[in-house]
Image (cartoon, one colour):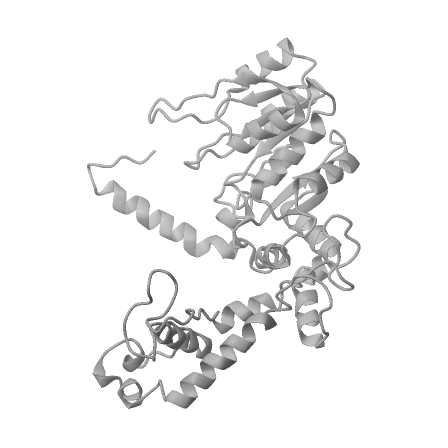
Length: 380
């Protein structure tokens, strides 16, 4: 995959569709944003007819953002002018709270050009864009590149955040009613929801509490060992790493204990998508031997909100069942902009590598030094 690591196959497929000039006879109903373009054209025409960008704005009178040499995107300018026109007759003032202008006309809200451009990439499952739930083309290639980047055997794009990954993992391992899972006590609510949907039972494992801060981290190795021995019928062990404060521990011994008992180790690594991507960062759950790992690519990397990934490896998870569960908990009309953002987030790591985190880690060091000079704070 190395020769393709600098590509973004899904994102590039969307650009190709946008530039193809094809007419849409399918969903989504906004028709690549065309439903709003008439409004934008009308706003531009009103702007031209009325001379909204008048002399005092061009000169700026030495005041204001637009008069201080700051350039404003044409679409943004149209939006600003439309907002002012909403008040009625183009005179300054606020739009009435009921959504109508002072003359009783409906208030016009015109999306900016940047938003309309994004809508041109908001497509559905058609030739060339592939299908998330049966990938054979651009999405399959993008997911394979993600697996290569994050060190997985197989990676899946998630459009419902890490929640979708946690649900699908639990619905996969709990393949019969009353299945038992060993679960860290302080888990995300999506894990609880997954247990409920699966009709499963849980044995909650008390997390280790950091004595310096009183913050719960994750179960100790001894706790997991005791639980695995006491509940040999358990379908899996699920833990969260890192916690919401960035604290964690080495997962390798825990993975070995689980595997010796024939159980997969599932890790909610929502806040650790960056793990393993720089020598100064902790090791990733996958590199420690975890079987299924969920990451919020939108939290710690550069994907759109709701963009996440599920990484799997090893023989302990039923992959075909997992694919079915993913299709079950996710929309059959997934967001292509969200998926493309996952593709681009992966490409950023593939092309920049550890350098992507150099500036951020330097900022952390500077922040730590600043904290050390403030006696009222203590660094954990």
